Length: 281
Image 1 (cartoon, rainbow, N blue to C red):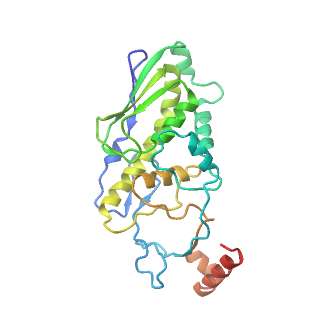
Image 2 (cartoon, one colour; image 1 turned 180 degrees about the horizontal axis):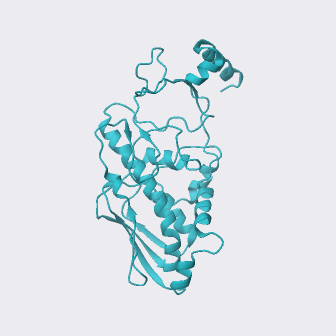
């Protein structure tokens, strides 16, 4: 993102690893972005009892017995009305708050004194134009979240996008522009870009696997950064993947540790089915 002549020039953009290629679709990790995994799994393959099962090398098998609930959107259903440019909705969750995640991110960055560099160097009222520039080819994600962040920092900022969540952008492509007070743009830019870079990296890796997967369905896991689960899983959907279970509450998935603690797979299955019946799930 570059600021126009009304303020000092800065450069930031989608990361170069968005277009990183891998020959195997099993696991793709970006070299620079946080090591959340986006894994290709074959859904329902080799499951002797026709239950769904993830099959990957050197990992214990797991058995999905049933979806325990159809998760309501909860807070998200109300919050999403305030998120502009929403083309791909996030997965449902009964208690997760995207607004709270944004608030925490902005508070974390500003601290008790705000952006002391901007406040001390940029006169109040200075106007600027910022451009979103892709430094690599990849799948764009995080547009709606970035738009909401800009609104929270300064409702007077004007943002125009020429590409949206799920769109392919190419290296050097300008896909958005912000016009408004320079101080506000400088406060918002890094938080917005942090979400966009992470989500675009995940979406790009997912899209690469979807394109290589043929008839397989690309799913994700619960191995997400604490606090960013819905953001990460949202990026998978934007990239063309599918959500598996969102948390511990919406699916029974029996793994080797459950089987060992329960005293065998037979007992584990029996108790799981009884529990679902008792709880009317």
